[in-house]
Image 1 (cartoon, helix red, strand yellow):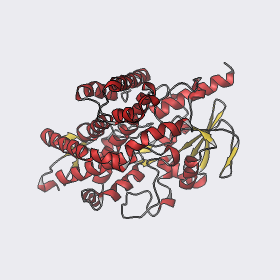
Image 2: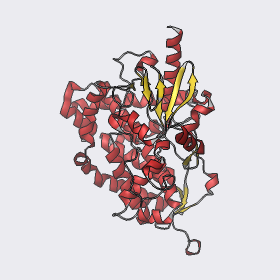
Image 3: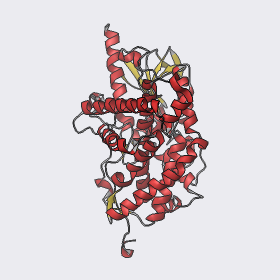
Image 4: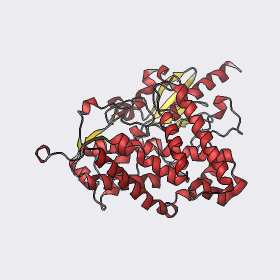
Length: 425
């Protein structure tokens, strides 16, 4: 292997761990220069002021040269949309940088290019249409009510992250995939392990591999007897046109894309709403909750950066010369706070009519599960505000621990008081 190839493989491994991990403990992310991690750092719910300064001065900015490769961060709204929509100038296929061949299935859609990406997305898209997802609405409503009951039983103070935010998307994904009840506890343990960095990156990647194997086994079992969920439906529709490995990888992508992201939206969304009682009340109104959810998705941008893109050839991007092989990363948290999105872009304000946010990305890599996420968030916030209209934070804001250097930003714990005494309201 040449020196250049070795460097590119190292950078590829760092980028893969960054895009699939959640913290600096995974595969040496912490060794990256501090400047390069600035778009992943926040002050509570807000991106660092340095990100806004950078966006105002250079919405396309060269952050650093790492082992011979330039890393660019795009933080302006229009510039971000341009990069995310470009299907010809960039590649998201990380396999060549890892020394892998095109025959290796890496899982999910984020690290593939057309035509492979187009074929795989075509397999998933029918399962995520509004019409196909409607059968999940009663299931989502039931899961939300069960978790509200569990919170009530555990009260008067509960950790909303553990009792509400994480269980809801996990159980919804199990229903979506069609995993039998007897398999869910093992799957839940794997899901927890892949986000647990207590013992460093090795445990995380081991859990990722094991959960992928688990889902491939589930696919093989359903070949003989397809279930009622997404896995069984794709088998019925496509049969041997999709391999066990491909379908297992797609199922794993659905899990990783919809689990921690929705959990973070529920926990951070609740925290943001508790800071504004009027917004919290609006989230409990069926006629206003959709606007509140859309504004939370923009304001929080829990997926902080896009999948890395690699320039296929020398190009010019808004006056900046990008060299072939350079890495271009879109700061979704930065672009979503761009003043181009309307008044008070740095504040949560559902009353402002804004352009389409980038909370789900944009272009051909836009989150395929966006409609399902909106369904979950809508049902969860309606239920939470309806059951606990006077919910209060039961910890000092300065004591909350956030996931610094995390692609999917979140909070470790969110203690809330369910029914504050009248005197404390």
